[in-house]
Image (cartoon, rainbow, N blue to C red; front, top):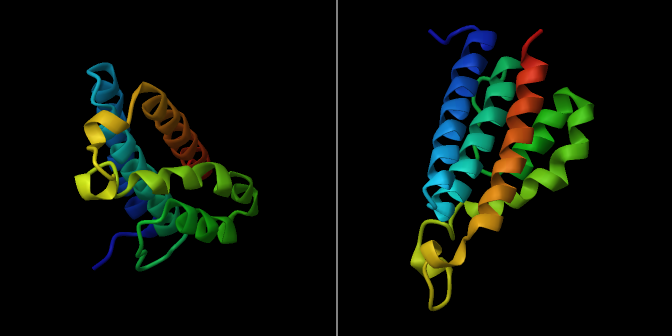
Length: 135
């Protein structure tokens, strides 16, 4: 039996928050490419948390942009964030695999600026989702 929607949402949000904590640690250690990937993952989980909390039974997909659009169907005020958060989608594959970057590797391509930007965006996602799930 599936958990009640609020409980399921809280589980997903807690995991997103834990991922964000590790991303911050990795940033401090200079693992910027991993921060970018974890930021995408945490944002994805947070948006799925929101959708589960709304009563969605199955939430598929990995696109932060598409999940944001779906979330905005429940809370129209989220539409203002869709384009801003969409940058996180660009960190889903190329941050992990050398074949996503011509003649280079993620560890050399993604630096502190990308990492800080990713942390800023994912923090916005988690803050916005958490605020909407408090009630």
